Length: 152
Image (cartoon, rainbow, N blue to C red):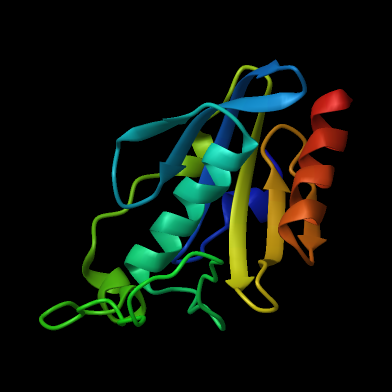
């Protein structure tokens, strides 16, 4: 394992373990360092929704815009965070599991999303098998990197 991958730490680190592809769409499991649970995903859109759900739950990285819709809806209300600490404040007290050791049969990626700006994500992705690190500037760019690395 690459030295950089060994020392990888980010409070919002998520692991994407690719186990298969169906019609060009990724399938596998999503892991996070605060739980041993593996969350299955059945396509790229499902994966994006589940990752976004973690980021919203953690309130980290903080979103710079809110979801838009063409349907009529109630006035937006911010999530009730009373009595809840932000992940940034709570992370040092939570038990962490070593997810960088996890592997998917077709590929493993560890995503550190630094920002959620311009209705997308920006950050770094680490390929588990090679230890290579790549910066991404959007969700599309992230999935292009994953596509390229899985094709090798």
